[in-house]
Length: 558
Image 1 (cartoon, one colour):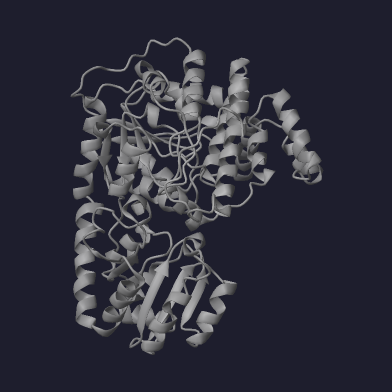
Image 2 (spheres, rainbow, N blue to C red):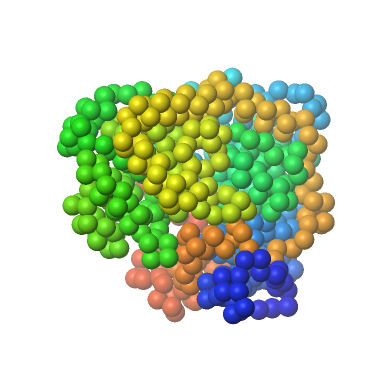
């Protein structure tokens, strides 16, 4: 580890009196990996190679996100990227309006990319369709392929436009210049970007050359870039706001709470009809859970399925289906012990029928899934979640507006199983809790209540003086390694693996030619680039690849 790396005292050692645990040692190596790429970026920056420095800053940021590297604010990277932005910014006649009461009529939503499915895409679409008093446009920084029709239709209906920044010749610095130019035509910018995206920091480094910037804190449990350029950070829950203030350096007045927006679902069938469609006896008590597979990770050798074996043995008329994890080797014994009534299913975007059938909705563990809880609440299912950690780690618990008041949130396994026992045995209790969950979630997570909270964020972004990234970062402490809460729990929840070099493939085409060739040779020598076609493709710059893809799609359409 270089002399530039500093560490904090461990606040939660795994083996008191026995030195660092194996998990902590691997976590420290993750920080060392981050520091290696960060130092590379700083060296390129010092040499004036800003294009390559920006790419290596992105690589460093990604290594701090997957796996977590023990900090939540990358001060060194943000300083470097803001400096690149200031040094490469062209003169402009644009000046940010100084009227603190001016209305926001046009909004530019900036995304790294938009996946065909997922919570981030859903929230963006709901936001645009619900905020009908404004025109909404989207700028995509590094998107490949078509854009889902759900979003293109929403943008068109609002009178907005779609911008694809990565079709501009060059790399991150040139894309940032284009994003800055585009943004100057709008009243406000909302960042929906990935945690490691460096382009917004370069684009919006100078407060006088940009409109107000709001950051949607959708990856609230991860390190992310962009706090120093954000006039307002939109947090989706209480724990996220606390972490923004205590670990990300966001001033309290620049934090607002705007919960996740959802569309209140309307039933297409009764619960009994939905059960029949799934092949379930209508008299069976159907427990259901749905999330990405990684949210059901086994902890200390105990699988998600193991926890529910005795529960289902006590209730032979109940069954539990879990959509997301797919077949899991360490679930098989638990499922067999209850005659297959614990049933893991593969991930699927087709969830409606399951939610309509559910008598009880059970949250994922060890990582919660708030969006699924809200969807279940929309159909009137009672909600159960659990979190066994300390308050300092409550970023892994349910503390979302609307859900706090409607979820049975267990703090121990006995309490958790007790909640489920009562819900299975008491249909009136199920009905009462489900109706309450539906009411509370609709009040806060759907218009018009949600729009009132969004308006607070817009008004705050205009009224506050623009954040000065350079001044803010000058007085901030550089990132240090921590194995306290909630850092240590990130490793427990998500695990930590030695970082393979395959992830570098995503960055080869973004580098200037000299550095691209250097990395290309490195990846080829290590067998990462396989076959002539892949090797040739990764010699080409990213912007050219995207232009060629667009032309190919256009020729097929025509």
